[in-house]
Amino acid sequence: MDRLQAMSTFVRVVETGSFSAAARLVGVGQPAISKAIAGLEDRLQVRLLIRSTHGLTPTDAGLRFYERAKSAIREAEEAELEARGEGAGLSGRLRVSAATTFARLLIVPQLPRFLAEHPELEIDILLDDRAIDLVAEGIDLALRMGQLADSSAVARRIGRGRRSVMATPEYLERAGTPSVPADLAAHEAIIYSQLANSWTFHKAGAEASVAVSGRVRLSAAEGIRASVLAHMGLTVNSDWMFAPELESGAVRRVLTDWELPPVDLWAVFPTGRLASAKAKAFASFVEALVKE
Image (cartoon, rainbow, N blue to C red; front, top):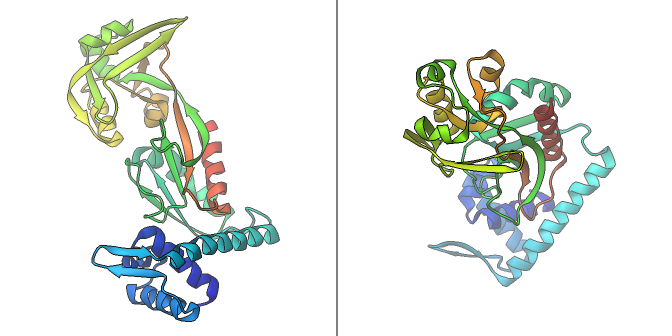
């Protein structure tokens, strides 16, 4: 293992907190990671990590080496990008985290376009509605919607989507079509359990907040979609989440003369790590998709 690769392995071990987690990210066996760290310590003639039943802890020398190693890796990446032109000839593996429904509806169908532009690039997409630890999972780029929980995250807003009250024509025929926000209190709402069940609308300077109720609460957007398409009730969601059905008429917007706060789409990069050309190129690709 060459020096830069050994430094990169050490950085992964420190950031993940274990040999096994680093091994999963690098795609090798745990013994190979242990051997690489032992070789690094032997060459430097200093202990870098303290091993205990509680995990791995960098020594003072290990912490100093970690910071220098990260800087050296960043410099090497920047030199490589400058030499070949950023974004040109993207290759290797890109790991992306995205909400399941958003990725299934908007990103995956368009992936052939991106892959055709970069034939030497491989993409792993981790589909999860939760905000996962980007460093621990080895994620290069996360696509997240709404407010960011971590204000220190390195993020760029790449889209802003409309939010609407939506239901199927079958449900509206059975339950009636609301004409003002207050009418929603009498409707069966499909509620996303990760958000508040109070919806706030705006129209010509006026504001109306409505607390909705329903017998179905779900923790993932796929469940929200399935419930709405089963004519069980209405929901508030981004138009992205029902794009095919809105286009076909299988789902209709209501209260269209009232506005809901839009939803932001963010490209989030791991804190403390230089955003790779691959990650930035994919973020720009998704940014173009949501504007089409």
